[in-house]
Image (cartoon, one colour):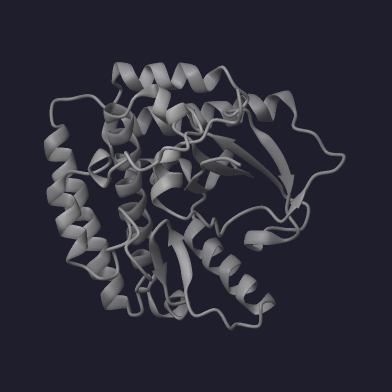
Amino acid sequence: MKYLKFIVIVLLFNINPVVSASATAQDAQLTPAEAQEAQKISESFTDRFLETGDLTPIVNDLYVNDFIERYKIQIRNALADEGGSQSSINFVPGLDYDPRLLAQASSEEWRRFYIASHNFLLFGLFSSLNKLSLEKLSHNSENTGDIKSTDLYPPSVIELLDQNPNLANMIKKKGPSKAISTPEEMRNATATLEQAVAVMREQQAGKSLRTEKYQQWARLVKMTDVVKPHLEITDGDFNFPKGTRVITIDTPFLVQLLLVKGDNGLRILWARPDPGD
């Protein structure tokens, strides 16, 4: 079977990951201990989101403490390498921001923005798992027109995001994106996403995200090499020393984690939806 794609995300969004290790290791190999620890982090990330539906405690406990600052440094460096001419940066699928916000918005505003946008995306992933057939999810179907935005989000949430021009393309691309350009717009977008997640949590009340369909999907994914960890060596990315070992691993619902070694073992540097190749 080909590398499984979480086609719901592929079909509705153009994913352009902005965070990645810059150089793949040629001779270095992942140690068994690293592979085992990475697998545990992936499982913990998945289990805890299934339990809470909220990234906040996961970010507090499993992430690199200054992951937002390192992200901002990484983007600034990338912009400098490109001559600083880029007018907008893609943060998550369908949501762009003006790079001036790297300096204008506080780290706490960025952290809240990260959690709200990723909570929203993860709820969409799980919603689609519960509504779409496993066959549709796991094959590279040519027939993409039958996947609707309501397969991911309820109508009230779609209407809520449509009212914010910065968020109107997050569920389904309708045209050119309007990048978030001020800290106030960032705060408004964050508040709207938090409200959308609250609506979805209310509808989910009393129901576990760990449905039978999710468990079937997870078993299907684990039969492939999708969730196996891979080692990359950075070239000084994220303000880590050149040669830092970065481990990438996908969760069963294909959110890719970037892991680095901290004082207390591996920690998450970033997480992103990863539909595969």
